[in-house]
Image (cartoon, rainbow, N blue to C red):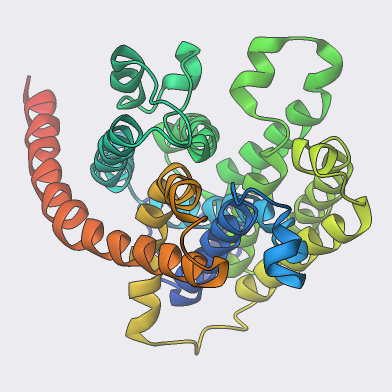
Length: 362
């Protein structure tokens, strides 16, 4: 019967024009959790003048693992980018990423540059040409130092977008996304043995397992589980665990592999639960606020927060200063979202819409 044939074909190759599912608010909450993990790592273990354990005890020991929040970000990113790209043209995909990333980022670079220039107690700002290069978000490709050290992860995100843009250009379908995940998994796994530096730089093999697993988990969430999808999730989990052994965070902080692997495994478990619908009833406007705070908080917390700690830790009790700095970062993040990200994003979107229209009509 034609109806049966259509039903059979849908999970294998759904049309590119199928609208994307509604937003999962739990992901906004998870993104803020990931951001706060990174904030804790950088500020609790910041420039206090003594070992952070002397001030913060157990919190400092736990904050050693806060850098793993970036890995959770990448898992979520794979899920969300696949979800939000469904039914979009390449132009609209690029527009959505530009509007989402750049307004807050430009402000973050400018604010961080101003703080480091006016109060260079942590370190001096990069040079003006390097600061200008940072505004492109392509400074890692240019060999330029990140104005805020946390910006390194944005380069990895951009490369994921670039790779996934190939799928968007062809038209996002279930089958093409599965092919993309399988090919990226294999190439990322073997790239190191090929000794091709340019390829490693493009496909970010250390973080590919997170992006791929997140993407496969979105397919599970939307279309249902299959052995192939579980295989992609499982294989990339195993590769991610293996690569942790040589991570800078593990080596520099002299961490045991087992607890780091346990944290990453918990991340996988949480995202599997999201994919299977365990958090679909999680609601609340506070989750939207949490999601809105996450990106600007990530952009401004490290260099500015550590500057405040370095400049004030001899005059303010440690716990009070830590709480005040985090509160200030959260408040500033809200202001950036409310008065920079939203209005500038709307203007940028209008300009890009007009540009796309002009390009189509040319």
